[in-house]
Image (tube, rainbow, N blue to C red; front, side):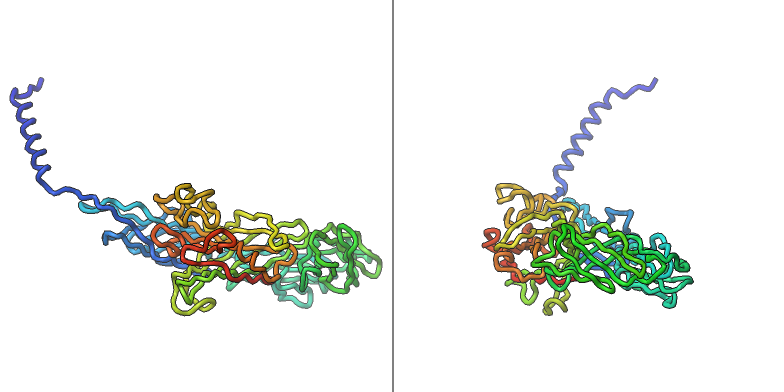
Length: 473
């Protein structure tokens, strides 16, 4: 059995006292606070997989980077080089662990959105005979738009935008689908004509707005033609009352004042007779919108939103608002559209509020940078409400005084009767934007754009809405 020397406890106590005394006389860890700030996020071009982010610590100490989304990207710890492995959002974290003088900095994050060139994939090949119509479907994995061409024009033709194939003669039909420099092909047979018989019921009837709200252009996605050429098309509205005929597609239907609320069915006719009517199709149109917020303190740059949305005028629904917001505090002396501003991707349309403004019914539609509405502080001490209402929260970022999630949004007005109509001053006053991303921050305050008439205040740097232009996309 081991024994301890009787003087050991006294010796240990003495040594401990000396050690503590020495610590009291040595250097103290001052633990000064520090913060990390990112430079504006890079904006990769489509197909670009590598960019470099940059962050600095207020202490001047080196920052280290890491990926918080390793499934989609990797980040070099020292250089900040980001390499994407998939289309989507890459979240980069920046850390500074501190020193004898500086406390560890709160982690800062920055999002970088990548759209990588991928592959084009076709849906199932259609079954077609001579004179039939059918639509081929192809998608590019990064979501870029696809255009179509036929490399066998003797056998088939194809509409470049819709993929509607017209069978011309018996034989192989080859359709190419292209998205940028990515191409795929689909080959399928065109059979000998059947019949003769009346056509089958057309499929995939759909309409889009014509040259104004009182006209609709009606198309179909396909028809079995009965072995004979289709010689005409007949369109009828649901509810009834409107109609038109045409030799080719699309068929124009004129409405008394607006085509909103109507759906359209189609009948195909050949030399034998008429087909059964198609199922009614909705009136769905895609629009492009540019909203401008005047920024008196960042001239010549204004805050600009460029986006798209779809309006289903039959169902009375607006959807899919997404686009990019230019950060007016970034960029050089050349204004939009030749600017060098940093642009934020806003791809989360989380709110559509029905309104009537200056006698026009429509929607206030808002799309966000993050998949959440939290943008401003909800603390009532700072005028916070629901975390994102325009003009609320004194412009302070969500979670203030804690970490800033870096959200941003834009709100536009969609006129249900005619989205392309020039907005009134009252309708413009309902537009709003907020930019709490790093390039839109002034300390803890986000850049915003509102009007006194719309929300009781102008933006945090005087920004307010001055224009919205909506056109057919």
